[in-house]
Figure 1 (tube, rainbow, N blue to C red):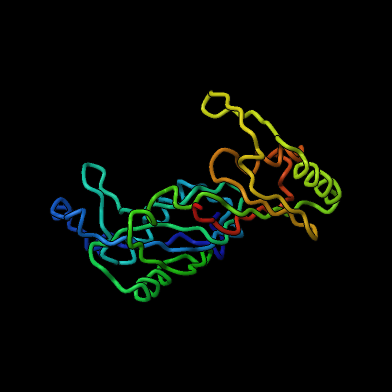
Figure 2: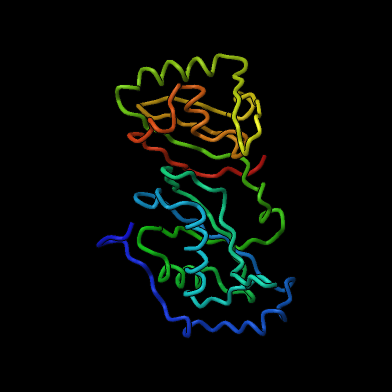
Length: 239
């Protein structure tokens, strides 16, 4: 993906003040949790989740913030990205949690990270996480998705969206890791609406992916979505 606008961010490891011998002395209770929100759009939609994890870890390393590190053999920054995005899906409000060894003002952190973030990721805001409830993986239960299909499919999407909203159940089967599972999409999808050439879906983060819904409700296979624009607009807190 490197070109004239996207380049590797390199740094000298000697400039990073990490004293591994002192990591074991870190009190895991005396740390501070933060969450940053950012957008992952354009060409960044083709960066896989694990590559994003490595990128975020490197950003934290070069920022020179007092980042907390894991203990044990495989020492790494305590960085936890949010729910993964499939390749080809953009995200307007993605998040990443990280841990600092001492409390730093959020505006200072934002200023420092903006210098370390690549131009292709837009840093939006930062939040101090005060309790375990906010840090829980299930804190965000739903996601709002926007799908813009090619114009020749608009009529089909309008009709099939209405059919889905009018039906009582929509069973589907998917295979994950060799196991076959059956679920009702009506229980996983809170809302489907079609307006002005855009499909908006509010769905559970787990249980059914957006490509499962496109296949089961609209008859669109994943390999046929190259001309689609698919964006995760936001994550929605657990009710």
